[in-house]
Length: 137
Ligand code: ZN
Image (cartoon, rainbow, N blue to C red; front, top):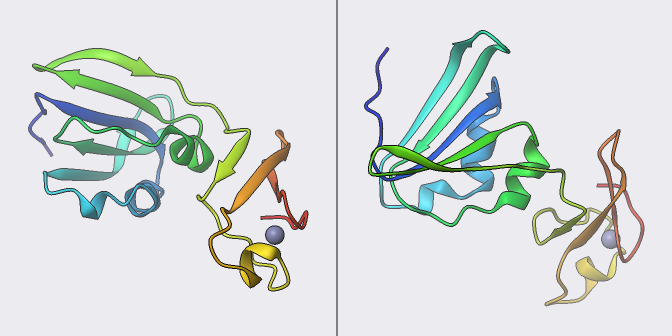
């Protein structure tokens, strides 16, 4: 399968196979009015299979959301057909309004307008806790 390469935009590569749609949803890419290509189960020497997302637009991507889903995703910024920048992802130390606390007694559930905040408490196991009520994500 051949997909036209983009001349200006962003390529998300090395997404764990099966996670492209989660990336698409969590980055709210459906709100964009440009072409977005989702490639699933692409053969990869390194990973066996991987997913790729191509966004045909210069776009300020939320790296915290991406890092939270999968810190191994590579982000390439394409300009005039050339890769001008590769961004490194890391597991974000803090999540602000990315995930909601599920504890019904948490202040973010009972009060309006309080930002949802989680702190990374265990990097190895990717555990985040709500900063208000300490509930796990
Ligand atoms: Zn909470």
